[in-house]
Length: 274
Image (cartoon, rainbow, N blue to C red; front, side):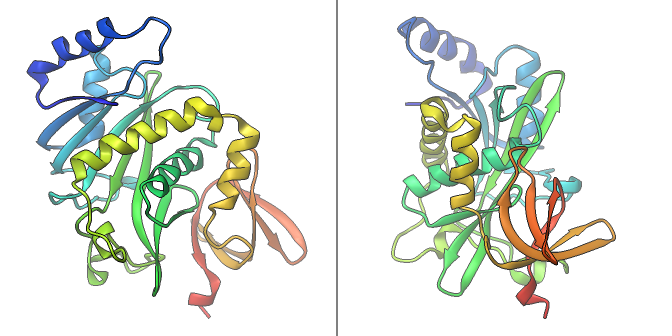
């Protein structure tokens, strides 16, 4: 299981105990730092990494954030009750290039599915919860790298989600939380994160990091695969059928009989625009 520290003061001794008690030949268990309110779990994680106190697969989890951020530095609303975490990743395949975001999305999707939640990956770095009324955004992933330290900022709507009127005008879909899922209560954010880290760590060490298996498995969980979508990148809008992924983690679109590849952009279902 993951080890947990609830305050910075206990971190050094707890981490040393974990390291010292482990079998030298065994895989080290991930360590979770827990805080109350922070500016951003990414900022705290980088601070701990700089002090040598956040190893690969260790993470920071907070009850709330005052300056949480998402893609393009957008504000990530962070009330208590949800998961706000930063996970340190190894800078090696598939996390050493453009495949990092969808690869992390795959591992997190598999972890949530192992917990019984029907989620899919919305390329490149969002997870959606499949509900009777259609998919809704459940989680987002933001990758940041500084000085050779790679972190995945992760937000999961566990007990609440932004209402429709609070989303951006151009948002691809409404949001949902695990509390909106059918026939089961939402779990506690703290205990769920600890289990998700364990799933992610185990899946990676069992071979999901291999490029061929990663791509195949990700395409199986890819939202809207085989359907007509619109990709927006800057001022350009392209419509085509979503065919799958490239080995580099990009998107393959069939546009007027020609396959095009994209490494970035915002994706939405074309049917919603017609």
